[in-house]
Image (cartoon, rainbow, N blue to C red):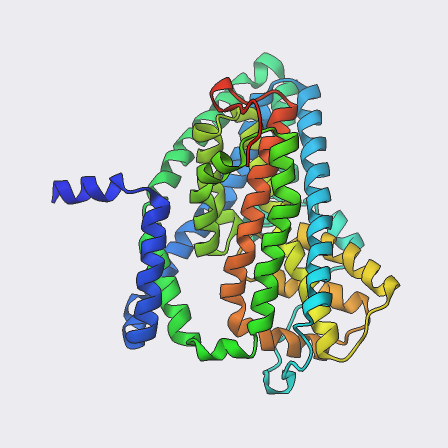
Length: 417
């Protein structure tokens, strides 16, 4: 038994995850009745991940800010992080829209067969911006309001720095809590193969294979959008700005990409991304623990690409040909919607209401579109989350390069493809 466990843990996590995914697909196809018996494992895994999300974001950002120690450096890291994520997000929306216009996946979509799915009222831009500053931080923590939590965490860390010696006990407490949480994350991550097996088996058993024929073009468009975002945006940043060898970089972050694909959650990927950034990419804790949690909330390249693509898909499905002003509105509102999307599976689908409302699509039509896509969104979400995970680690590496916060052992001298 000891030899078995030793051999199990000797296999890299991503290989165990991929093996579990394959078993899950086979189980869902050939023994679907058994998936209901193990579905609770997937639900338990998702609950464990969600349990960690708020403390990870809160403690990681606050401790990361205090680790910077220099307020001027904090401002530099924050400004560069937000600016770079904004740039990659707008690129992602544009790529999603371009892929949608080229492949036209929405033409002929049978929306009449879909059951309308009720959506909440979309928040206005004013409400989204004002909501960043929490009135009650405890309520924000309970609700999982990520932008509000990030804002308060950064302010707390900044306050600890300005307090100087008197703030050192709080800084030590945050650093200690961060270390304890980091080890807790390692424990939870060992459940990933079992959770992934149960989640994939259930998804395949419920959806089967033939049901993807009607939505096949949308799936192709999502894959194309993710590939183009990585090739046209992330790779040039890694090669020419961060000056890191591309092959080595993606071999290093493959665990994070596998977790992103299997869980369809940027938040679930955060613990693994933190470990990779600190242990493998050897990025300074002050930068990694500040940039990565921010990226888990606002670094949504996959979401932005998907929102842009779905907006075009929706217009095609209802027979509307977009003009240039409409495309510009979709680009702007799509980027803002992606910034405010919660880092959990399928959250981006519900942000679609805000974008479609801005171009005149009625709530009834939007509900039909969401009802049409929702049964298939899990697998589509898994694919597009890979782009978000890649963006988060790419931006973190670039910011670390700018801040000279990469240790020499991992610092590439010349980028190679």
